[in-house]
Image (tube, rainbow, N blue to C red; front, side):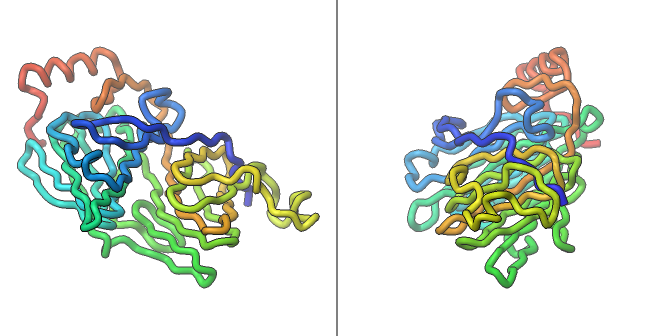
Amino acid sequence: MSIRPVKSTSLAQPTKEGAGVDLYRAFGFHDPKAQDPFLLLDDFRNDNPARFERGFPWHPHRGIETITYVLTGTVDHGDSLGNTGTLGAGDVQWMTSGSGILHQEMPKGNANGQMHGFQLWANLPRELKMTSPRYQDVEAKEIPEFFEDDGTRVKVIVGSFWGKTGPVDGIAADPQYLDIYVPAGVKKSFPVDTYRKAFAYVFEGSAAFDYASKPTGVLLEKEVRGEEVNIRDMSGNRTLVNFDTGDTVTVQAGDRGVRFLLISGRPIQEPVAWHGPIVMNTRQELEQAFRELNNGTFIRPAH
């Protein structure tokens, strides 16, 4: 076992999207190589309907996949192909935009006005940029969940973990997407494929993630002295934690426990031409997409 050291941490930044939705952006619209194959992660947790109820009216996507995970509240969605539906608490939607789609997402709070969730964008490789659009809507009850004796809880949204496989399949980046809770004071290790990019996003409580690789069974100097490791590097709410190489992520939960997303994927390593919700490989492809959007030929026939 080699522990993945923490390469960097950063706080999600407040921003506005859609028709004036206040959210926090963990990463996105900067260097597309930094999180390859992922492009953007938005945290849209909010307890004030006035800050999210205008939603995300009709807008296009091409060349990417969007992954929406709802914790609280609902999201009504519809698209140019006639698909409609509602995502509820614990539900997931994985949308492959492929050759192009127009859709809208309109969030609604729960009885207390709360709307909590995340949206992740994953890139598509060149050969799948113009594939037919596809939806995978997954209800909360379909998502496998582990309960460990020490109180640790893991939801497997995408990928395989501890012998269980999440319900979303056929994704180009071959990702692993986990929702993990570790109770107060517990130290836990989670396997992550060595060849994937990996990050954690903390959204409840706090934790320290090991920052230096060490062989299994070798104690850090602090551990020998009986001191708590990494206490100065505690990551709290809305903290993005990027990991370096290794095959294990180790976390020490703080005094209120910690809940975080642990996400990894296989890098695509292709050129990226990106403007807003359209992501292609070249500037020429990007310009063509916007020409088609303007002249009404953006939506392609299914094939």
